[in-house]
Amino acid sequence: MEKTTLIKIGTHIGAGFLGAVIGGMIVHHKTSKRYYDDLESVRAYYRSKKVVDIPKADPKPVVEKKISSGSEDIRKEYVAPGEAYTAEFIDYRKFAKDIQETPSVQEDTHVNTEAPYQISVSEFGDLEGYDEKTFTYFSNGIITDEVFSVIDQPDDILGDYKTLLEESGYQEPIYIRNPITMTDYCLSPIDKEYYLE
Picture (spheres, rainbow, N blue to C red):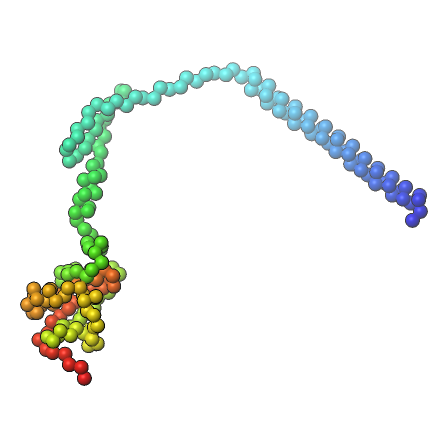
């Protein structure tokens, strides 16, 4: 390239850059002056207003007048200036105690025990999530399930079922809940011996 061509290109680039700088300065000057004037007019407006101190309202004092304690129903009476009213409070400790004393039907009252325990006929199958199984106790001490398969180690599943059967005289079914297997078992004794074929 020739030297004159390079000078022309440099001149054009320099003129463009200089024009951009000058144009930016003009735009900046015009817009900043305009916004500065607007800001000053807003400041002048608020300076012309009188500042009025608004006194803070005193909060109404609440005076505790009477507390009756020791009763089943806890009540407190408060007196506010110009108005008297009674507020009634519930003794939640008593409420929680009443709930704990009456267990729900869907609640296992032996949650902390991991060993199988006896339940009544009405409790059999009343817990959600628990299965129900019927076992048969034969007079020779063999226990089978519904399809007459022999149950190995029934003590692990049924706990102390022998004592419970003795108490019933081997005449009535006993109901056992196992919280580990989450199953209610009905153990029915029959007066027959079980023989393997």
